[in-house]
Image 1 (cartoon, rainbow, N blue to C red):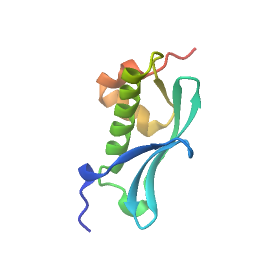
Image 2 (spheres, rainbow, N blue to C red):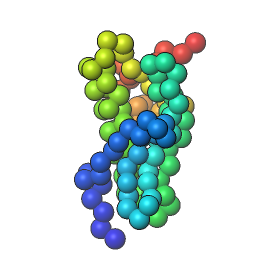
Image 3 (cartoon, helix red, strand yellow):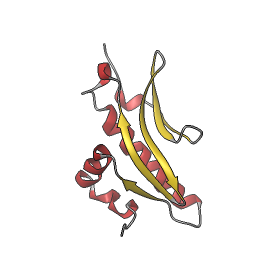
Image 4 (cartoon, rainbow, N blue to C red):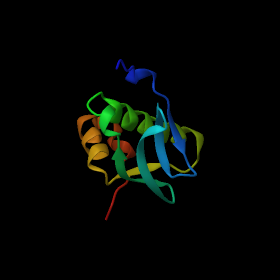
Length: 106
């Protein structure tokens, strides 16, 4: 199966508390979160087994963080992330330009 990861559209599904991309056939790649005021606590990233290893999680995390960054431009209060999910944390560790989005925790 040929799959163009870069063409995937990531959305913030606020009703389901997740960033998601539709992979077709009723399958989604997701980052589940909970909101704690202005912080997105990113808890879990999931890509269906048959789609793993194609860079989908990387695209999903990148686009989700870009959306949070864009929200910072649209609101007076800054939006932050708490990367509790190891996938999100590893991405931020590899891409330090996103470290300013990380909420300071006690």
